Length: 140
Image (tube, rainbow, N blue to C red; front, side, top):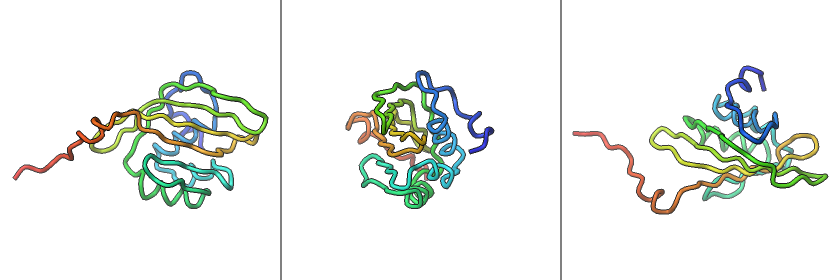
């Protein structure tokens, strides 16, 4: 991941992991193969309301289909656990899509080689908020 991409990520209060910064920078740059290469061979992406996506190739394909036009704004995070085999972080922020913005939490697992073992994405919205979304309609 280039330093130019890393420079485009806002500081995440409470977290200074380069791999996590590279994940967000890559998503915003739509550099999905770069994002996928941050994952361990058996790394898992768990999107909201969908089945887990396993492995860098599958993750790159998934992101290229589902994340185009999305911008993520991580704002703060914390280290949840630090075990010898994995560090777990929780990051909160927003995902900005073409028609709406939603609050999001990401839970990252990083192995000792700083590869992503997993990212679980949770929407921080009530069901009412999700169901009240109305797509913009063109006027006649």
